[in-house]
Length: 120
Image (cartoon, rainbow, N blue to C red; front, side, top):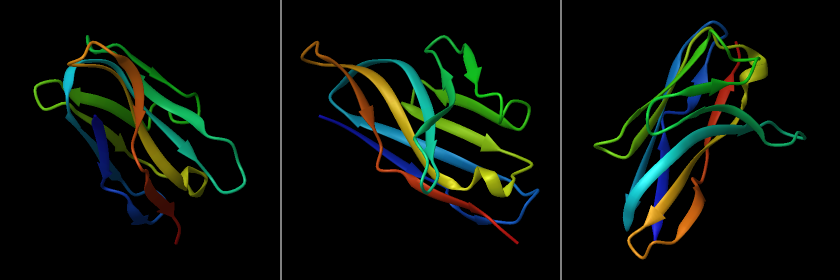
């Protein structure tokens, strides 16, 4: 019913920047909190940042001051601006959306993930 499609990942040198996007589509009535998670090889998936529909944000300590989460509610799109990237930021990045669909069901949806590799 709801699809989340991430884009913007790729290979970047340490110190570089990338901007991830996540577009939500489908039978959407309302999206509340959206977020970014990441999973590095051999590690558990971890929270990167979240943002409420009103714009309140929360960041993992490891990315605070380097990453900025934002959203365009009119487009049901989530963004993650990543600056000063480090090799330890290498991971598959996933977006999530806490969504109420037109049948009034509430579910948390996940995207398919986009690879971010930070390497020289």
